[in-house]
Length: 109
Length: 109
DNA sequence: TATATAGGGCACCATAAGGTTTCATAAGAG
DNA sequence: CTCTTATGAAACCTTATGGTGCCCTATATA
Figure (tube, each protein chain N blue to C red):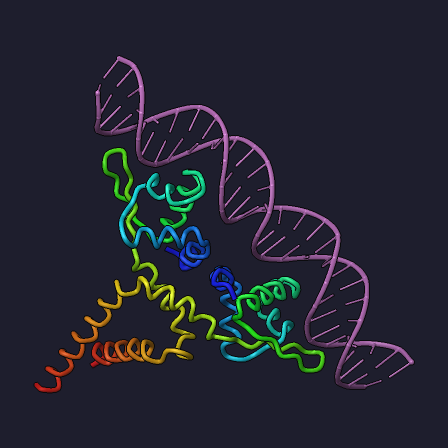
């Protein structure tokens, strides 16, 4: 839930690769570790960290635990970036603040 | 230069706070460490990591070394995020049109 | 010149992070 | 019931990380 958990989760290249993998298809621990040159417990640890950052959700089917990507959690990163991104990208932050302004004036009136 | 250096740089909460500090004003090492409950060498190490990720540049003036934020380096993060952001971008634009519809019906009535 | 100030650099320490091996358990398949 | 497969979990090792204290050099300034 903490923002730090997400920043930490995406800091590791292996975990970013796992995210990339799960983006195309939900997978179990074994299927994921097949893509890496490391043992299953190592991958399982990475998955736990990703889960702690709410970047993946786990769905147990029988004896399998399928890991699903939860991309919405990445929005915190986007939000943090928006404080600085106006430097190169005015478009998105303008859209965001426009919406927020409209929302606040709406609720006020 | 490496993408990993940037992800690693923003993974630490202290470094993100330093980024936030430098966003408002370029500062020297001493001025920065005055904001934290840690010694100057510790802050200097963080600065070195930020520099390695090209997130700050250093300008030497006399005996002072002023650290400037280089927000453009954060674009790599934005680029990486863009692979997944469509998930919530759809939501956001939907929200936008919803609001605009509400606003137009409001002004019409 | 003497002295205070800004900062670099090194040695050291404790803990966290990433990995392995090994063992245990739970659920399908024969 | 037995065997295989999917996974969790603990113990352990090695290296990275974040921090400290201490000492050095360079530049201002009284």
